[in-house]
Amino acid sequence: MIRVALPYHLRTLARVNGEVQIAVVGRATLSSVLDALEADYPVLRGAIRDRLTLQRRPFVRFYACREDLSLEPPDTVLPTAVVNGTEPFLIIGAMAGG
Amino acid sequence: MSQVRVLVGTRKGAFILAADGQRNQWEVSGPHFAGWEIYHVNGSPVNPNRLYCSQSTGWFGQMIQRSDDGGKTWEAVSNEFKYEGVPGTHKWYDGSQHPWEFKRIWHLEPSLTDPDTVYAGAEDAALFKTTDGGRTWQELAGLRGVKGDLWQPGAGGMCVHTIVLDPKNPGRIFIAISAAGVFRSDDAGKTWKPVNQGLKSPWELPDPQAEVGHCVHRIDLHPSNPNTLFMQKHWDVMRSDNAGESWSEVSGDLPSDFGFPVQVHAHEPETIYVVPIKSDSEHFPPDGKLRVYRSRTGGNEWEPLTQGLPQKDCYVNVLRDAMAVDSLEPCGVYFGTTGGQVYVSAENGDNWTPIVRDLPAVLSVEVQTLQ
Image 1 (cartoon, one colour):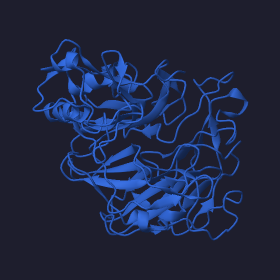
Image 2: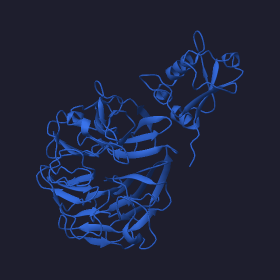
Image 3: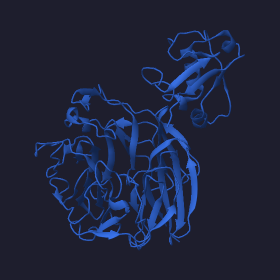
Image 4: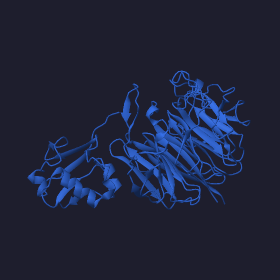
């Protein structure tokens, strides 16, 4: 199982507390993890990436093992520590001051 | 015993204010959807416990929430708003053409007869409709066919911010767009025509016959007389007595005819309210005095309503969707400010008291009168 940490507003939208556990069939890539997450929590469709283009929303960022994966291609394979559940896959709302 | 429920959308959540018909003692619930921008909350006229809420953020986009118990619990029902066909382009700030891009829902207008049917006004400007309680939405795309390529955003974006349903003619819908103008459909949203003759926007639109491009801030009507419309435009307060076919100015003796909301009294079709704002450059009341102006003559002759409102050092704004009335006797009038106050007058506007003083900036106010 892959651990996914959602930002506060998406946790409230999905009505979950803490991390969620996602089962991914096949290779655990950025897109396959998001596909599985949205399948388990349909309310998140459109909130992380565009419904049609599947492009990441501009103010959403992806991190794993202290690496920023936000700009990596969708078929990027996640680190082994994320795949085996040692580390979470982080979905974060970008900082915006003011 | 009558009750009122005030539905307040703010920059950081929704709030529900409830009182009995005396409108003296208020219960406040919220924030609902804390931290999200709530552009609008509105209830079904035929099932008042059915509420719809537009929830959005710049980070995570749009969500429509629905309640069937008057706002105690909510269900996220949909965030899918897809323009029909190839979206095309509209005029951009620099005069170039820019692709239509969905940003958020500004206004939700439930049907007068069916709680599952709702109209939604979007930015970038388009009108959507659901007939299944918000689970799926279809664009009424004929609207954007009315010279949509000439529509241009104002400073606040290009949005359908006002939707008015004619209670005497089920096929008639009025909508208003900043900055495109007023449009009317007589066939339930299939086809549309611009109804902006008589509006004057000389700086932005040198052509006095321009059919679209006017920055209309708000329109309203009285259900008993739906051919008479009142409008707060970017500048000018206007009225039409022929369902928008032509407009005449009724700003009269207002201290400023710039403002955002215009609201018709619940029982008096010729009594209207506006909140004058100093100018398009200074979005606060003239002289730091928060004054609602009332006309009992359908415009031109206005009286300031000041009792209970701050008359010095007040520099808030009242946004276009942030004024409403209840249908009790005497008529209750409500408005919210960008400073987070929601005021009520249970006496037609003669005296005002704050229900709450320190909410986030208020984006919208709706009132339900519950029997």
